[in-house]
Image 1 (cartoon, one colour):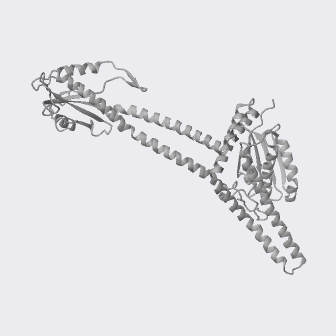
Image 2 (tube, rainbow, N blue to C red; image 1 turned 135 degrees about the vertical axis):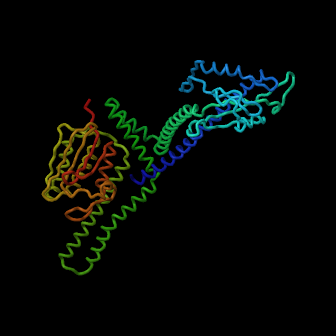
Image 3 (tube, rainbow, N blue to C red; image 1 turned 90 degrees about the vertical axis):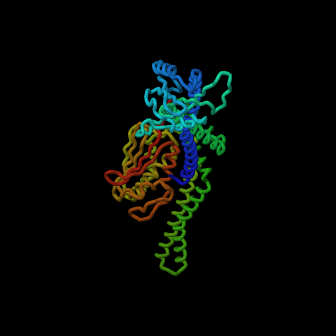
Amino acid sequence: MTRRTRIFAGIVAVYLAVVGLLLYRVAADLDPRYRESAEESLVDTANLLATLLERRTYDGIIPTEELERTLRQLASRPVYARIFGIEKTAVDLHVYVTDRDGFVLFDSKGRDVGTYYGAWRDVHLTLQGAYGARTTLADPDDPASGVMYVGAAIRERAPGVRIEAGEDIVGMVAVGKPVAAFNPFIANARAKLVQFGAISVGAFALLLALATVWLVRPFGLARDVWRAFRREGSGSLRVLGRRLLQALRTAFTEVRDTLAGRSYVEQYVQTLAHELKSPLAAIRGAAELLREPMPEEARARFAGNIEDQVGRAQDLIDRMLELSSLERRGALERTESVPIAQLAAAVRDELAPLAERKKVTLRFELQPGLAASGDAFLLQRAVANLVRNAIDFAPEGSAIDLAAFETRDGVELRVRDRGPGLPDYARERVFEKFFSLPRPDTGRKGTGLGLAFVKEVAQLHGGTVKLANHAEGGAVATLALPRAAPAR
């Protein structure tokens, strides 16, 4: 990953981290919010039952027979409700009634009648005229067995007399509901929150990307999409989708470079200056020596050295300009069907003299009728760079194979040499700008821009390039390209 991409990815990662933290906090807050809503409903239910019991309460005696019959019928009553996708088929309430001293008069579960409950928080506070509520584990060994209870005071009211709160409390009724009953709703809410959050993040990221692209290049993306549609509008959907994806990738690259442009230029200048130091130092040293008297043979050797170093510096600058020009293009102006056989023939004619000097044989194995979609000149330069690189590392008298065949997604070209292969430390860096390995026969390094150029050409065409060691020795470069659309 390049430095520019890391900077842009870091900005996106910070945004996602902030949104993720916000969603996490909201999701974590769902449980207490649901409990508060359930507690409010339990308050209503408890006061409703207390009011019903007060109607029959007389002389401090609370009759519970009617409440018992009502709850028994409620337990056998068919219930069905669908609440936000969750089905409810039973009423799950626990009701108990105590006297003014806290002893249980009635329990809907048929237990603990006569037991002293006055120490429970809901009973103790309610009998004092305050608001009483508690959450207790029904099973001490099960953390998920919590039950939430809310109490309401039962008051004895004399006819025509207004009773103030806290006076003549003759008992209390408590209504409890298992906390586990809220869990399906909480889980459902969290799932919807995550879904909504993901959609929101995706929509916001898309809008952010589109807005940023528009700010960077107002009409560039629309122009690229229109060109892709005009070029492939009546062709296959796969090809059209690939062109549209390439247009979006180009827009992203321009946005990324705009955001990280200063550091990118600084890195370019520093690396280029470092690479030029070596030939400049060699030229300066040879020039200083030429000032001194020396045999004509030595003078010719130093002059040749100056010429070689000037050629190396010129080659470095030319390749750098070529690569930077390619990076600025962003998208192909036009594409055409490029026959692979014609492409291979052009590369063979170009590199035959170099291969003959190295005594290397170029062998071609091409599937008939293959054609790639793209820019013929750029594809020829990319393949030529791969073959030239293979010649540099091939032993004298060996062979270099160029194979091309059709794949499910397009066309693949493979260039294999019989050289020393890639060392482990170089496998992840071979496509970096200015990274180069010493040639086996001379020990000299190249410009380190040839494979970087190939990578840019591959990305510009919506393809990929890889360089790896071959199982039988040497290295093999694989260039994957889109297949040309059938002629209409």
